[in-house]
Length: 402
Image 1 (tube, rainbow, N blue to C red):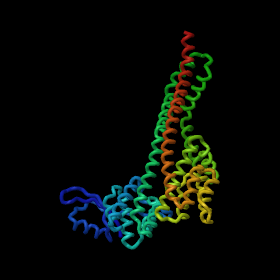
Image 2 (tube, one colour):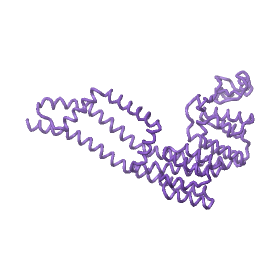
Image 3 (cartoon, rainbow, N blue to C red):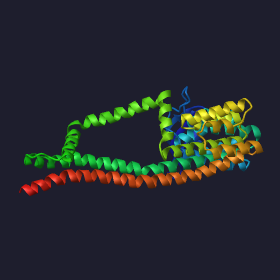
């Protein structure tokens, strides 16, 4: 059934904006009129899905919105409210107009006999494989309320991790941008004025001063070439890392970098353990869970290790041994996973590892930020000292000549 977005005035003259389901626009107008509303504007709204599963009517739905939606959905289902009625309430409460339309369409599909999981699967850019498979497992086992609560916790934990990483990177990025802009202004506008004084000296200039003048001249005359080369380098890097060989080499380099490599490993191990524990606790089969988890890992080498573990499980082997052989998962992690498999307590053990590594990621991010701050301050200090030395020495020579 088509969905129409409308703006109308109620009896008190207050403007309302909402959506309504109707067979056609004429019946939608009649419904609004019968409800005592004076229509201002109405149009059909669709969340069309492209062949590859991309939503074509708008941008992404924020993960924060999805986490809140899931928490509200779990509360409604736990209160024994029917799925269709819960979706109606969620549609009314949604602030995001795109999400409102998607929820209305999902409600309509469920009302027409579709399962909730199948309806959610039509919007893969909003509800990923983890979400859909967990909901499907919850529906089949009759524990949808419990699964949704786990999903809400899982989604919120992913949001927190994402925000922590962003927060740790804000300061370095601001420092780099601010420092680059200041250096550019100095070399483009300040140094050229001082250069005229140096030229009038008609004397051999020190090497640092020559370098400073050359940098200034290059920025003044070829700034467009510098910007173009930076842009082309970025495009070339993205294209190279999109290839199988380039991605493998880049991800291998990331794992070898001091501090960064450890952080990448910790983040992926935490994501692996928390996602696998959530899926298994929700009743998703282990092979399906491993396939989903593999797609959530950001490093291709750790992905390959997870794929080897999936193959091992399919052949009747263990999860811990292939992960240990990869030398990418810390020995403590593989040892605890092995103990969990032997004792039949794999899910709780994975959850313990995830919580432990979440704490370690926090500490590592804080430590990385504390290391970067003095390094960047020293680098900026050296750059300023170089400029000052390059300018002051010739001016002192000029003073002595006078």
